[in-house]
Length: 145
Image (cartoon, rainbow, N blue to C red):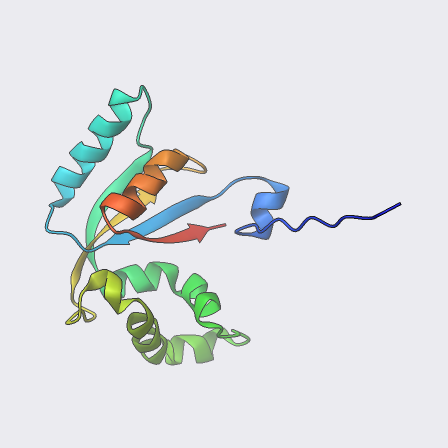
């Protein structure tokens, strides 16, 4: 008898246990916050669904501050001390921005305006809307487990 092992990649352990999570996207676009909100609402409505998200204007540093613990993991930084992490967050922001500058433009910096799109509640953004945001709005996605 032959044994097969199947590996399934998950975004977080909480998804395995509860299947509860949300996502946040940072988008660099010429569109306004209201235009994006209207676009997402209309696209979802045409499919008979809700977009399930909030839309707000922020800065790249504001986006980073919302996802910094996930960004640390993304950068391979092992956080063992919250105070050290907070003290080094400017350096971590610089590393993160260097990695993802192609999403936000060559001259992107902490004050660069971005649109943040976030799930209103757990699992509220339909998967196909998430793909739309990534593909059409060049959204950098973080899965918040």
